[in-house]
Length: 327
Image 1 (cartoon, rainbow, N blue to C red):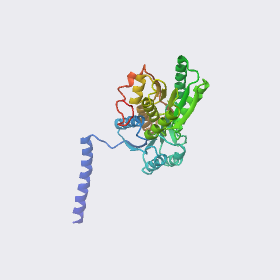
Image 2: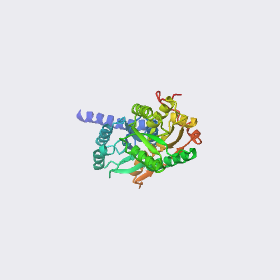
Image 3: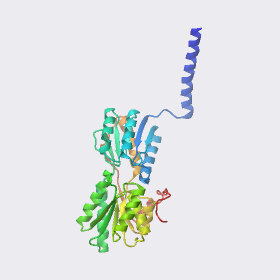
Image 4: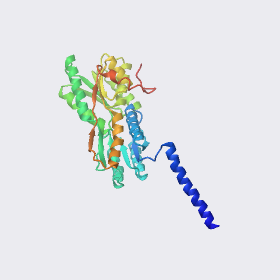
């Protein structure tokens, strides 16, 4: 009787294995080759949404399971999510860092667990970060400053008064602010005020409002990121200063495209966040396959102007309900 029972149990185990194998063949869905954790910065900005789409597409194309966590701009929560991925023993982690210093212990945990970490966009200085993927933030802002200096000379504007909307907790955006400031002040222009938009829509909106209310004489505004740029555009339009205050900054959006077409937005430094997300996944796949990868992978930038903006219009159809374009 016992032998018969064991035989029956063995039959069902074998049958189950056969059925699972057959089911995989029918569905065409083999088990994923890798499990990758991605911790983004936030999903308020279109930039980070595009980066996420690139990562998703690369994961789908290569049968990779992509686990996504959104700390919504909270660096402590971002640290906790990295630790969670380490505990779950993923095969690799992609981090779009908010605050590098706060993530050091979490990256060390990943390093001790032999989990490679890829930093995308935000700089993460740590031995456990295998590859840094992003743009030359200093070079991009210096190019934008040169573009502005050239425009000012053409306008006969010798000492422009410039306001800046930055994000003080962002290492990346602080680099952009410093590089732009250094080059425009070398050309006798003045930074008269700097406001903290914190890379968040609501805070950037308030920062832009206070900046223009307190300094209505501004000739120009430099915005270090997408929320700051959108807020500057909305506020210049709201205060009816589109014929007086020009805007330059980082990262396209529907509002920025409209401003470029109207002419009061002079230029926008444009990255390729979709490609950055794609490359993050592909680099981890290459590492898993034993391939050699560069420690730094720079993604090219472009300075978008009114003359070149038309090629981007079809890409930026998505917009926020409260984007504040005034259109």
